[in-house]
Amino acid sequence: MESNKNMGRLLDILGNETRRRILILLTKRPYFVSELSQELGVGQKAVLEHLRILESAGLIEGRTEKIPRGRPRKYYTIKRGFRMEVLLTPYTFGTEMYEPKAPRRTREYNQARALIKSTEPADAKIDELLTFLAEIQERINEIIRTKQELEEVRLLTETYIENFFRRVAQENEREFERLLKEFAPRLPRKILEDLERF
Image 1 (cartoon, helix red, strand yellow):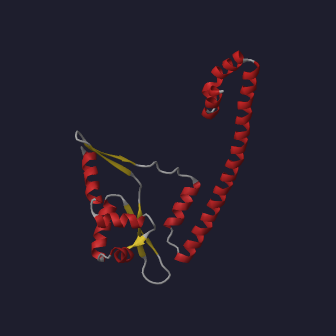
Image 2: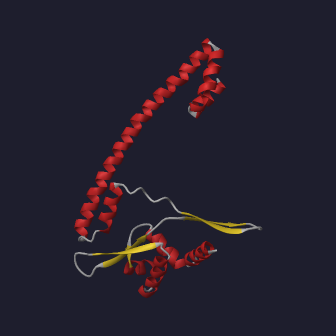
Image 3: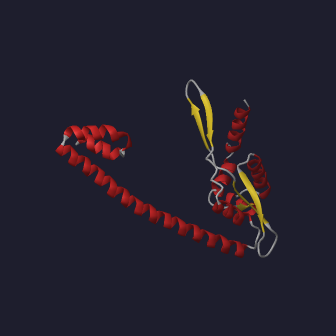
């Protein structure tokens, strides 16, 4: 019953067009209040109330950042992702909510969170974030290169296995059927399908 009330509250919150527009903007980048007010054409007081409602629902979070000149600014970002489905038929009405699993708390994840939450001056913060991003991208590129190399080895091995089975089939059909029956559960699906059509 409590979860139904929470889901109803969430539907009510998301039913407001201005709040949906705020969420859409926040998927692009963090915003502070006056930026949102300008983008939406809505007064700052009204924007603050919408942000308060979204924050109390746990959909967004605010963090204060120092800027080189002027007062610190409070930026708002999406706090958590989820997927909601509404099922409506002549016989039933219901909602389901799925939340993605939180990323593993790796060293890199913790480092990213620390950099994002740091209150250093903007230029130093951006410099550190861009350096970190370049390091992560280089690691991703290395993983992609390794994946490509492994894909080539996999393709070579699969081709050999399929050709081996075909040679056995040409020489001894009974042995081919025995081997196929024994190893079918472990064979890649494509090889199995090709061999069954052979």
